[in-house]
Image (cartoon, rainbow, N blue to C red; front, top):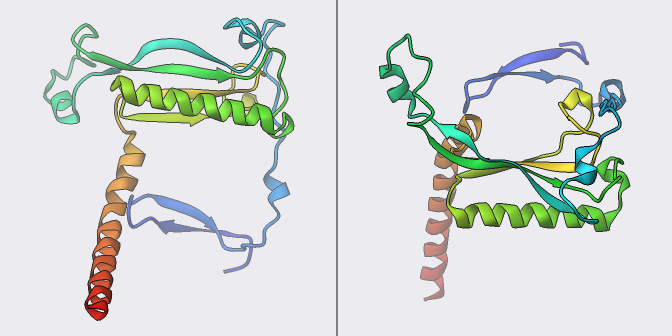
Length: 200
């Protein structure tokens, strides 16, 4: 196949088709796009909320995710009903954001190590808090930068999605990896047993 062309490959774990470029030495700069600024109309909420001067944790919506039953339960519902009523649904998780100090509108790689470490430490503390609260199964940390990525602000921040269920794609990857991990564990156990037998 000529270099630089894409070919489709099927992922044996997920069953998804993936477009893979054959030429591994392609120029990454051809795909680079500068992050487009977000028009915040001169009012950056992350600069003024919450109060404070340093890195802060802002709760945008608590109990943000609704669990409306399993897929099997959803199929048993009347086809005319889109979902169960929200008062019967179980709410969990949160949507939070770790915001950089006020007026910090530079990209992550330009702010310096101190601010980056403070952002990561705040995100790590939020993950630990979510685990202790036992209202979540999975916390996703995302940095949206630029209008193309869906950012709603130019302020440097890390969004935290505190989800009540493991996302489908992550679940598939975990399930697909399980046989490989189990096989590796069995191989290690067998090798360890042989080694211990030789030591005795």
